[in-house]
Length: 326
Ligand code: CP
Image 1: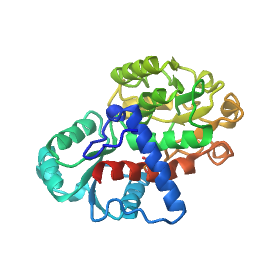
Image 2: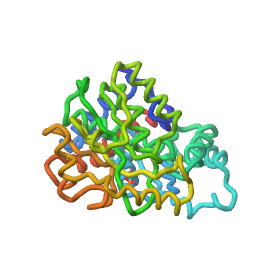
Image 3: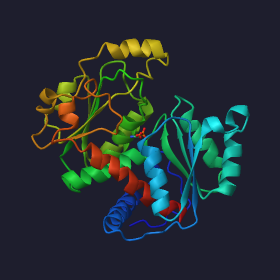
Image 4: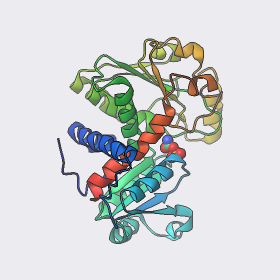
């Protein structure tokens, strides 16, 4: 068990080793148990987390804010639009200055080709941990909650179990590619065979796919790519189907929407779920475009674990905050 995570940033999924992620999971399950028993656990008494948002959020904000309070600290919610960032505060200044006020700096910045660079620039200047609440490349806390949920539903021995990380159609907006990228990076380390399914034009970053393939090779797990949603779902133990934008093909929103609209058949419905194993679970980080991305029947049905998945954001984030900010 790796126990010394004090002062560490979590920006990319592979920033923590496999053993360190296992430590996070152990602490997360302990914190979940303590909360269930109403046992106080003020590991971060008087510590303050800056929560800087450049993009909207329901779960991430709610779970970080509740989490730091349950640990005895305080979360300062900061909407970037209410700061002087647009008037000139640089990432270096944010890192230097917030690093002197706060005990951790959590940031959500999903703008394509800007977000991850911003987080790294803040981290370089900060004396306290920088935590990635989602950028254009990674969504590591979502992925930790996903791993926790998969362990709860499928056990810890995941060898020869299949997760399909599939694209799905959405009409609302071009969603970031960070969730599928985090999943394909993290899951091979824990024994899952990964199948990535998307229509042509919705490729992920080649460097990330290359790293995911290296992880799969290192841990002796499978890694496949298909352009058929049905093929991806076939015999899956875990169906993780969500939309993302065609950002590697076009950064133009109108062109991207037009391309996206040509794949309206990529919905997770009962027929496609029937191709997976009978005891397969359905996962989605939310928000979902209901009856466009996934039918009500699936997301509200017996195979769906989306509420447990959302709950586990709280426990996984509390674990990382306690380990890095304590
Ligand atoms: N899954 C997730 O990150 O949700 P929010 O965008 O609501 O934070």
